[in-house]
Image (cartoon, rainbow, N blue to C red; front, side, top):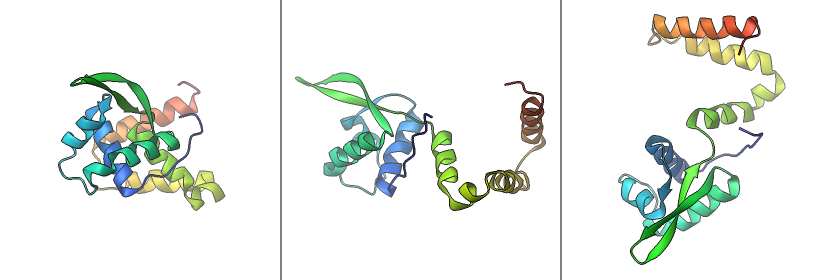
Length: 135
């Protein structure tokens, strides 16, 4: 994640979530076909893809033959986790007090009743590695 920062509209987020879920490059027609519960119109796909390209959220990954023509395939440039971190960092609390914001986020997540001991052990190991300087 090379200091890229952007926000997604609801419709763009739907397209990105599909790309993240599929985990592979998708053509325009595949995106339309796989987006069964979309809130956007099929005819809007060009606008959505162009907007995502301009924001740097996706890239042209290659080309695929569709009928007699070739069409572009697109892939995400950031993972869903990287996007979520990007959104967290864009929040005003993070900018004002980075350490406090991180501590508050981790505290809120750890206090979740649904978190299991295995996850807590993994988090503890991550923190121990970070403290000891290992990566």
